[in-house]
Image (tube, rainbow, N blue to C red; front, side, top):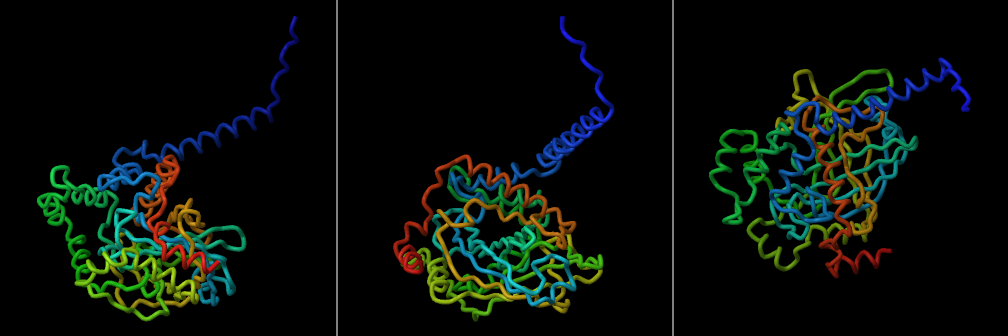
Length: 369
């Protein structure tokens, strides 16, 4: 005969209920993140699906496919503490690693293709908190909403019959999106930088800084290079691509083997009425700017085994003192980066990078060790 089960004590039931609530909240967050609660919401999967209409390169990021890892540090001058309580702005040094990349759609593309030059950074604060940011060298962005991003990718995807975008679809998209037309014109007219080291990079989206007194300001940030800007003759890009297809990355590797590269981190403060939910709209040039310190990069490594390989530079990985704005693109970027990581992680082994097949790049990197 079995012994009777003793009645459960009230505190045991309370603990069980609390655990159940926590599990339900976690499950709910997963459901929300997947977009199941709001079918109209653009999920990370839909964004990555749209990117993949331009081609899939297994084991590689779905955007900014061609890259190079680097490491260094950030020397804060203390000016940023008036704006944000994030530890990275307290006077002192914070370790940094990151990635240079091109938004070219193909990890083996030559470097002389008009598009984004980008830098991604991961700051490791002394208290363990992390700040990640992915920045482009354009002060404006071509789209304002996640839906526009998906529509743009689908409109410019290669047609199966011709291997090129359908002009009618592209024209229809552009007719409906003057903000994208403005960006394309800017990209056409802007000089093409000869080096990652001489490019200015922008945060793309707006964020919020909150200081130790609880005061919050909308901000954007940028990296201003110490290296002088040098322009490449766009008419000579085709020849340059044939002679030295990795010329931008080769230049970065060569420079980092000789001396550190430096940028000033500049925070721009919004005024009331400045748009914080639309990255296609620049703020007026007279907005107050604060120099909060110097980014110093001093070594490069191939992405095949470098510190940036298994990392997403999710713009919503933020320390206390920095928070997201109301820009809907931020949540979409975060979700898309996560989905891209999941897909490429399941496609191991990762193929060799274009730079690992570049004998000159390998030689410089091995010599710098």
